[in-house]
Length: 93
Image (cartoon, rainbow, N blue to C red; front, side, top):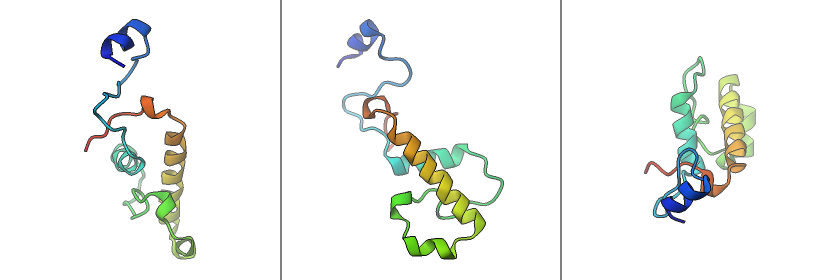
């Protein structure tokens, strides 16, 4: 679809996804949000690690901060998945 289509139909509100741009990946979104969110404690590796890549055996060894970072990342990814791909922001890579 062209920019003219978005202007004519009114479906272009917010950031439009260009045809040649890929939507932001879930991991890229986590890194972006980690820079925008205030946590009140230093970052752990789980803050930007994709929750699907966390090994279940890691949970028993996590500190409270690590577990909190994991849960926030999981919530962000689940929320991001509800956004249609065509409405996701463009990748910054």
